[in-house]
Image (cartoon, rainbow, N blue to C red; front, side, top):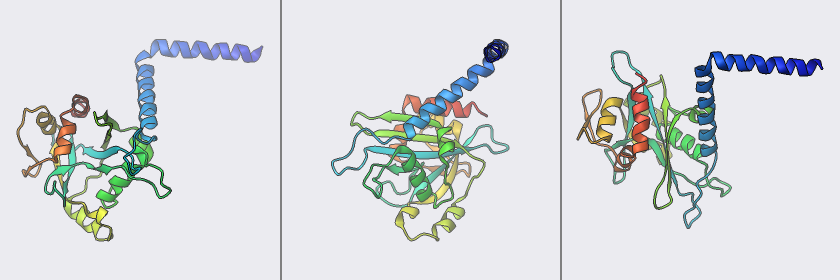
Length: 233
């Protein structure tokens, strides 16, 4: 009987709290729901595989930060050091691979691996950080799944940090980027919407973006994420 009474009292207290502080409970519920959805997505592998068994998926991590004196957050972009896109800037990312046991990588595994490789371990995001990130997801008309995670950070590295870190590795995967630049979130959003034809970094350097990265930025859902980040200022 006492247990029933206690449960009844607890229910009444919760009801009163929700009634008095509805905004706080709504916000917490929305955060929990988004976190759960993101976690479920990242912990699975793409639904389709290539003919050789590799997962049909592309992942990327883009970091943003707040700098005193700037009226908007700044995105950290990395320059391609090789290949057909050499000299262009994008996020830390790439295609998903298979694990050593032959199983396809999950989005989470791919995001962590690509970020570690392309930043030469300057950035090694923990799963929980990725679960709480702002996320863009799309399945293309060819069945490729694309995941881009936007992560807020207070640690901003420079080109010299990246080049120094790369010296510890012989694997060419750790040397796919050769420069880092900060770009205003407002400018990147304006570029994504077609309001700007070119981009200048914070150091006043004109930069070109990787075509695949541009195609993602032009997606409406990606622009919504950019707008959310700009509004954080």
